[in-house]
View (tube, rainbow, N blue to C red):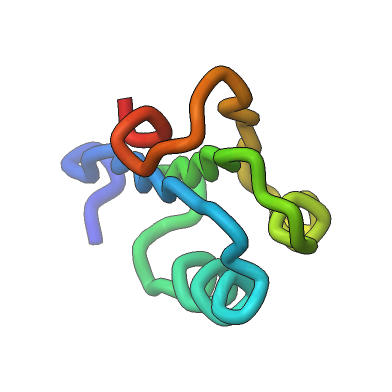
Length: 77
């Protein structure tokens, strides 16, 4: 794969109480064959009351907190 032709991709994950599947999701995204330096993963934590944030912080991703409103629509915007 010619690195000069590779596009950077960003994966946005809006999350609310996602602890039951988040670990598996993040492992799957990180284990992709796409070059790691061209993948940006951003989790938007929407006031989770479980371990979503602490799970996300174990991975090399950006973790943002959306605290102004409880809504999947807000977390995606």
